[in-house]
Length: 93
Picture 1 (cartoon, one colour):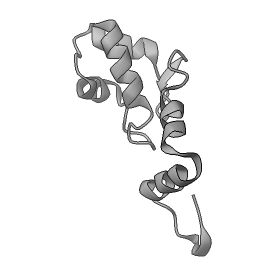
Picture 2 (cartoon, helix red, strand yellow):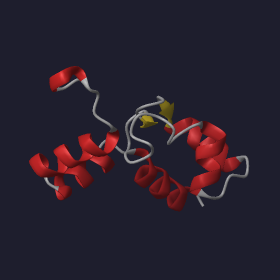
Picture 3 (spheres, helix red, strand yellow):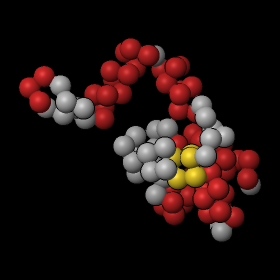
Picture 4 (cartoon, one colour):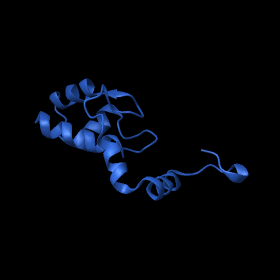
């Protein structure tokens, strides 16, 4: 994102802006909405099916799932997909 003087904002600036304009509750809802959609990790476009496959292959923690799939390494750094991965892990195990 480019702002005045053409300096890019870092992720913390974007989150601060988001929190000040939308509120934390709305952000939490947006992070967990569309849980049943095709992609759990929207930044890297990693599907729910891929996550389940990795869990069935032995990944039993959120960090292991992220490592095996690449989830959490996109633009949001896992802020959107981590709650979805946690929920999926609880349902699958």
